Length: 319
Image 1 (cartoon, rainbow, N blue to C red):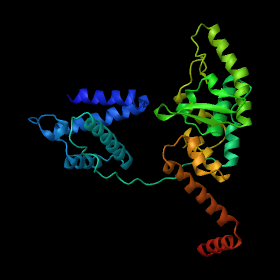
Image 2 (cartoon, rainbow, N blue to C red):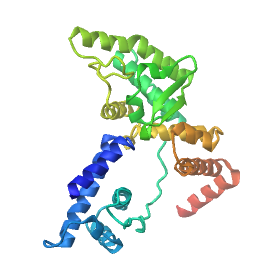
Image 3 (spheres, rainbow, N blue to C red):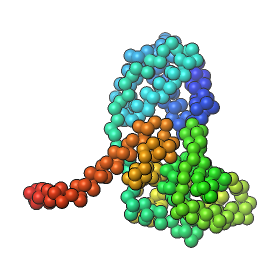
């Protein structure tokens, strides 16, 4: 019964909410872990019923996770999974209430997103060797991520016909299978055209010569002319970070953060940035205002005469 209910829930997430495979695996892991805890909590003689779960039992489970040294972020995610699962069971009439709804989510420490400064982003974009096909592809990838703010999963799913060079628009399918339009600048257009007119054609020709099946509809290809994966983007990202002598503790998502931060620094409206990022809630976009404010404060303290004088005086006193 438990396994069948979990499978039904995962089927709903896949067919109705159209969640990614990685997200589905996370939900499956979270719900299965709770099912195992529940079987132990009810004892050998206890009947396994979702109806037996109440708020105190949810609290016991959260305490169990915390004692198991799970991070607050992990506990919050597992609680969110339970809320969604029991919400599904409630709609299906298999429980009378959602016992996870009233449980408080652990407070998470707010960390400002990492982004690249102007000199860093320029060094990074220029890192790929554009004299070779894969370098032309990599330059086009980095330019596209920075110019549009799209997610890596969105980038690797792009097709050749999703880019309109005339209007400099790109059609993106985001989370929940939602479509949106993002924009690219002339630098990105130039990099994409060079890749598509040269590097991409070379990759396709070489793969066909070797008798390999090619992903003709995919915009970004791997070295065998198949569709590029998100994992491959992470590898090429790290490679070019090293070439550009930049720190390695950032992911490809940093270009999305950089895109949003630079737009807001340039005076873009917050709701415009929200639309371009594909955020459902404005609160998801507002974190970038904290980044820009922090930058403003640093600029103020570095540039205001009295502030710089005070800093020098404090430094001399400490010595």
